[in-house]
Image (cartoon, rainbow, N blue to C red; front, top):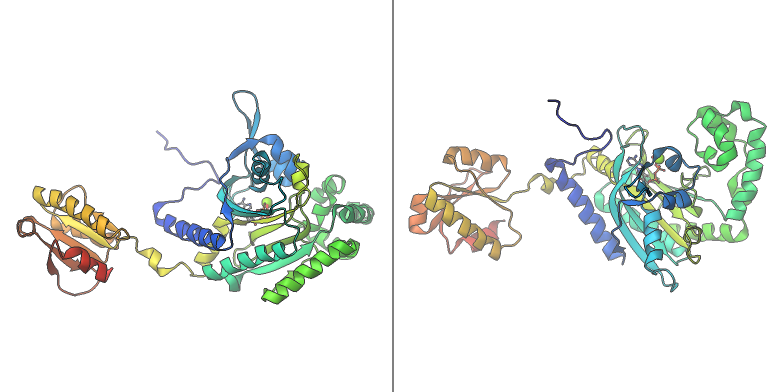
Length: 425
Ligand code: ATP
Ligand code: MG
């Protein structure tokens, strides 16, 4: 029989890799807690309508990347392709935005997009998203950028990422700009790539983001969005830049940065690296003041971002920044020989866990000779083996054998063991 395979583009995270994931998740959770953000946990499946109304009908995601299906009632559901829409839906549904009080939340979990799988691009991938509501910025825009910057520092990757920044202005600014951009590009329609030709009618701003070289060349002399910003949008952007300068975060203005989702306005930003080939954006976000109202709520300003966990882990690995201590997951491995030793060993191990809750202790299971058990102890990465045979049980003693140095085995009484382990682990 053919063995079954996971769905293409959907990865297993194997035991050997999960320590790095846990380290990343711990680091993120600690950092966000330190900034006063609370976690929100959201369903993976949402009504399809939610994504159509928020992300926008003519975006890549909604047009061709969503996993959409009818459930048994005939309702159209979609595996979430991103987290912002569901987050806004939940905040509205539970009345968390109405009071006008500032809200700061974050989430993490799998997202689903039917894209061509390649390094750094998968069909099931994971994001950490951070969203704030009822805060008009630009102070909060700057905080979000500052906390992501601090995360890169804690992860040891800050030298390898650069911040790109732009302002999309207000929706009125974009409407005026869109008209002029369309006029300019219509006159050069034949030179545009096929995707951009299609987008000229549906979503012309996205053409700025085209990867096609001829299209990019055409855009050099096109009208610039920056010239269309009204005073307020311009002031928001100037203040944000001043705040970033004040906290010392370097950035580059990228006038073509538009983002793939329709709901953004004013601030947009991306953290990019040149270490991962084409999949260089590790974190992206911006302000979406219109989305809450668009989803049926009372208008509430909002700004947030999402980072791609797989890409960040690839970057950590590429840069050799995986913390050395992750390599060892076991402190002590207990080997036992004989029935009495198995019983005594289990009891002792439970007592050790009472006394030393942080101890990573593997109790050998499944019997076998001392020799084969020591092999497993060695392979586990443990620093010490605890050795319990019939003689030790009779004398209420235990052997403590260093596995990584040439030092001699010590013999201790059961009573002295916890204190001795507390000293060395
Ligand atoms: P890209 O331009 O790389 O397709 P995007 O603009 O579609 O990214 P967002 O929707 O802004 O991405 O998602 C935020 C982050 O999530 C991205 O910057 C990236 O790090 C990550 N991400 C997005 N799509 C994928 C994917 N298919 N596989 C892995 N990570 C992804
Ligand atoms: Mg994409």
